[in-house]
Length: 311
Image (cartoon, rainbow, N blue to C red; front, side, top):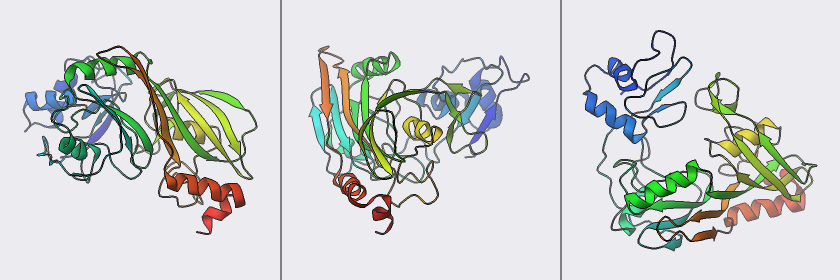
């Protein structure tokens, strides 16, 4: 199946999204295309839309349909670091290197595969390929995720994310010594026009993005910071820190070419605060950063980034 990214021009404006996509896949039924849209395999401006959404000039349509639809997902006995669980939600501390849900190239070993083995049921709102998934973090980012065990919980948690009442805090190690003790980055994020596989700060086809940060510790040539997300855009912290010239250490996509090989960006979601979707209790969860991140930080503390590069 050929995926695509299209910027809507005047010719396509006012056409329904499902009708426009159907013109690209003449052998696919309209109902199947509508399911792609409902499942989030087709996004407009990085967001899910209704199947009858009418396109506007400047909209960016991203179609990333899985090679295999409605995959027969296999439960896998993969150990989970469960921080909290009840009848409605499960909060896990995802390890670095684990993909959240199956997709092309990652059909096994994902968080979803592990959840299916552990849980009797998960919400189905995000489709059969993403049961229970309310929000995501990158493969090489570790830390806290909340998943829904029924549709009622899923809807409520999504509303909380939309209304910005879910509080997420991350630890990040970045290149350079940041002078300010605290700061806010308010810069819109959208697809990088030169590389569609990346995001960037841009005024074109973008959405507002706000990251609050404070310095935890300064080193010779790096800084440990804590970031609090006010919005939840794709790669937000990674893009924002690159934008202000303090990219994440180990980030293969947004950092310097000479960045030390740390197995991915040194970024950890350490705190998650939400309102329980059923009991309405305010709950805060914490997860210590992984040992490998602690080890890298200790090496930087003792000898700077060169201490990592020599490994």
